[in-house]
Image (cartoon, rainbow, N blue to C red; front, top):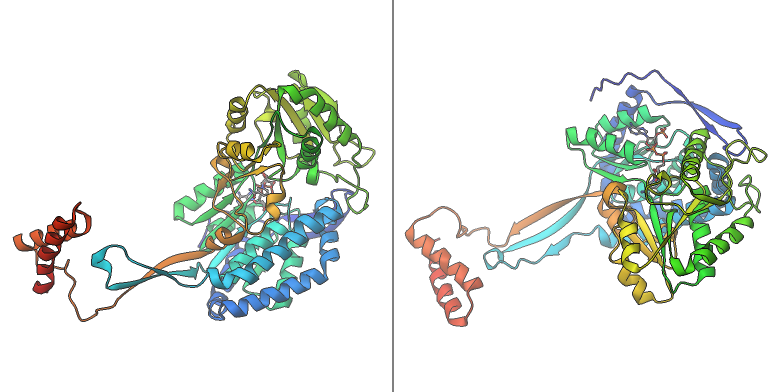
Length: 521
Ligand code: NDP
């Protein structure tokens, strides 16, 4: 399909955000290359689908073996390209993917089987119904830089095991990690045309949205998600949108301050705050407010900021200067409006140009940008509230709805409150780690997007539902076919009475009247 986007082959680079070292330069895939890749994927997909689920699962098992074997190499690559501490790369990237593969190896065969559908309507009892799950064809995946391995890999594994081909456009900042994913999938037995990576920038992504893919799975920011949704609407392209968040953390009056503050500090600063699920707003019951802040500052003081390759590092750099400037602007705006910076609130040029100190802010208000816009940096803004109703109101006072957390010693109370929060996931007494539960559906409500990845629901996104209806009495005319008239109307009234009238006599009379229709056919 032609688009009016003219691409001059632009250069993109993979750069180590901790050191500024250019790891590799690429040319963005051109418009023609995107269309050619999608055509190749289309041509190859049918034989991939006809291989059958069991054989595809065997390939997945081999991929899992290879990944486990190369776990350190992959984690180091992620650290070099995206900056996060090595151990975080090991856990939130490699482990998440190994376990996603485990889930599909154990469950995909069962979940992709035809599903018998018993019919309740008496008139339809002669039919045998089944739900079939068929691959879409080519799934386009556009992914961000913050989890450059686990996000595209979990989505790709689900797409592939369901029999789709995949064309992946990774973030321009993390092409190397995506290329490593492709290399392992190919080595495991996925044909090269069935899984392709197109390094490129936003323009390449936009071209992909217009290419002949059959579904698009997009993970990224809300503004890009909106643009993609508009594009997709014009051609009715199905899309999954995994977008940004502004996740609230509610610390109830009975919470364990030590545990909750440690959770808040990790939840706000993991991956230097560049996680869609990170704690971006913290609401603490007034009675715990000051001791909670003190504990957060104490834990933050202990953190070591540096190059993620150093095993002692807790926080790495931000991905690039643009991200740092955005974080800095939000903190400065909050400060100018009266927020107290308890710790941090500044760049760390002595460590490197993309480093920002982990920051705890007190006395923030709901009107400040820091409490409304996604920050995506190492900032923990904390606000006091008076009672549970106010906490729920504050949590829901956001255009986003990705995830949330509730902290309490009383699990039942926490779960009751969780039900009142508008979010795709609510955790009680933990944060962020839901992303590591392969069985748990991941996705948002409101501006955080729609559709789900991970587990059963993530797999369901990769298949078209087809209903197969097969009549058990092929030699018989159906009673609802033509032959209308007064008598037929009475017979059909009888049919409705037989099924839905209250009282056995009325139903039996209905059955007798309805039986006349059978005689007439
Ligand atoms: P962006 O929206 O900037 O980019 C996401 C991807 O879209 C990148 O590959 C990008 O390419 C590409 N892209 C940019 N413009 C277009 C376009 N017009 N058409 C098609 N594709 C385009 O997000 P970031 O990469 O900055 O990622 C951070 C965001 O992702 C945050 O908002 C975060 O919350 C969200 N996110 C959501 C998750 C979820 O599961 N809900 C998980 C992780 C992150 P390029 O990088 O080359 O510009």
